[in-house]
Each structure stands twice: as structure tokens, then as C-alpha cells.
Image (cartoon, rainbow, N blue to C red):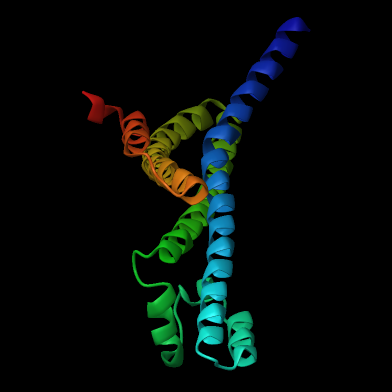
Length: 193
């Protein structure tokens, strides 16, 4: 009975760390990207309203327009009449564009992580069926997990580098190049050698 309990605890511990490694960094990135986008929406909206007031323009129309089309809403594909607005608030490589893109990357990484988790469970179930299932599971899982792990390391490493820059820049209005470089070297150990 004690061996069975220890085995269950061991599997639970492995499963917990699998969940952490697959979902923690993308979830943090998604939450931060959403928060940053909302903050930038508010900042840009306030800038536009203050500018309109300074030029004695109709603030009501502008407010209605900005409520219907918040700045982050035009970061994706837009109609022809919103292209100038998009270029003003969400030009490629701008702050808002970066938050928009990282939001999408984090979301799709979470989806991919769920697929990886499902595949691990399916490979595990196949391995417990019979001896032939073990061989097939090992053959298929090895290549799949090597590819999935490499992609996860690359994407999550990029997320950590992005977070190390924007996390400090967003909250302290400054960034620390040494922190960004340290995180980059930590994510990709080959750069420190």
C-alpha cells in the first residue's frame, strides 16, 4: 500500500510540474499583455481627448468613436477607413503592437500546451494498453515531445525576455539591459559559453 501511495504521489508531482512548465509563463504573459493593452488603451484615449479639448473640438464624437474602436482593437486586420487610425496607435513594432502580438502568442501557446498535455495523456494511455502499445507510444512520443519541448523552450524563452523588458519598463518607466541580457542568457544557456 505504501508503494502505491508513493507511486501516486510521484505521478502527481510529475504531472504538477508538467502543468507548471507548460502553462505558467504563457499565462503570466497573457495576463500582463492584456493588462498592458488596457493601460495603453486608457493612455491613448486620454491623449486623444486632451488633444481634442486643446483644439476646441467635439469631444463627444471622439469619445463615442474611441469607445467603439479602442486603440488595441485596430491592431489586427481593419477596414480601409481605419488604416490611418491603426497607423497612429498600433503601427508595426509600436508598444501597443508588441502587447497585441504577445497576447496572441501567449494565447496560442496556451492552446499548444493543452494539445501537448493531451498528447502526453494519450501516449501514456497507449503505453498502458499492452507491450506493442508501449513500443508504439515510445516511438511516437519521443519525436513529438522533442519537437514540442524545443518549441516551448524557444517561445517561452522569448516571452521571458519580453517580460523582463516590459515588466520593468511598464511599471518603473525604465528598463534594465543587464536584466534583459541575464534572462536571455538564462533562457538560452549557449549564449553564456
